[in-house]
Amino acid sequence: MVKLPSAPLALHLDSAALKANWQWLAGRNGTARCGAAVKANGYGLGAVEVARHLLAAGCRDFFVATWAEAAELLPHLHGAALSVLHGVRPEDMAFALASGARPVLNSPEQIARWREADGGSCDVMVDTGMNRLGLSTRDVRPDLLAGLRIETLMSHLACADEDHPLNSEQLRRFRQAAAGVGAKTLSLANSAGILLGEKFAFGLTRPGLALYGGIPRGDGAGHIRQVVHPRAQVLQRRFIRPGQSVGYGATYVAERRREIAILNVGYADGYLRGFSGTGAALHEGAHLPVLGRVSMDLLAIDVSTAPEVGEGDWLDLEFDLPKAAAQAGLSQYELLTTLGRRYARIWR
Ligand SMILES: *Cc1c(COP(=O)(O)O)cnc(C)c1O
Image (tube, rainbow, N blue to C red; front, side):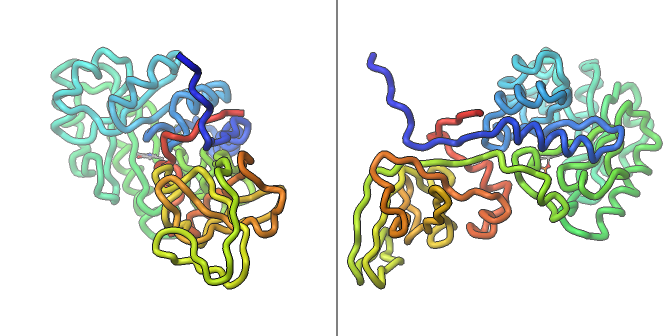
């Protein structure tokens, strides 16, 4: 077989920035350990590679959502702890028991299932106000939890990215719930929760977004570094005359002659339609705006100010997450987790 050509679109992933973000977050924690949420394929970056770099930085506690994610990651964790946030369904039990990862038990049903199987160490999630997954605080009773070996008791903050009264209320309820449980470790804070201050850190934190360059609260700006740098190759350069349009719907109409470059990236790669007319490529300091609608596989940009850009050149897409989120009208989480499979993922 002839060798497959390299992909015409790439994510440059900055391992030094990933590690620096983890270390910065760990430094906000007081004496708490800093873990890492690597669900959804490491927020789109690639869970195995993310874990490899964070292990090297010293991270020993990882979190995924499902057992399929756990199966992919476990061979690469070299004994570091892995918690599976969605707990155990009946059909998960055989795998979970054999795996060495811990389920995060979320309901009386899951607790009964794990206890009856004599499953060993587990985590427990208590719901302190988000009303998503977890035991309600009234179910955190000695009789319900009897016989479990609880490694980490955790809860999850609903509004940590805002100054919201629920934050301190959840903190209060979590402390109260934890008092009767006898878990080895307590854990409440995600990325934004870490920035709320040390009293939210307890024994272990669970950042995701901020590891990958997301800035969950203003306080993180200037400390958290960009990790993901999408790039795409120019497939064609052309010019359009005044009055001519670009792309589907002819939404962009040139008021004067324009030089345009067509890049090999589109909404199927997670460069979503929200960047139509708002996003930009970057080339040697030049800011090259997206023209018209983003297509499934292609993107037009204005290279009128960059005469040197031609077919085969690589351009960076602007992807500073808070700014890109505002441009696209999406959350920073969505921008990361929709990054597509066609990118070559290149760690440096
Ligand atoms: C996703 C998730 C996290 C990480 O949250 P970020 O906001 O990305 O830091 C932490 N804990 C739980 C339970 C989660 O589901």
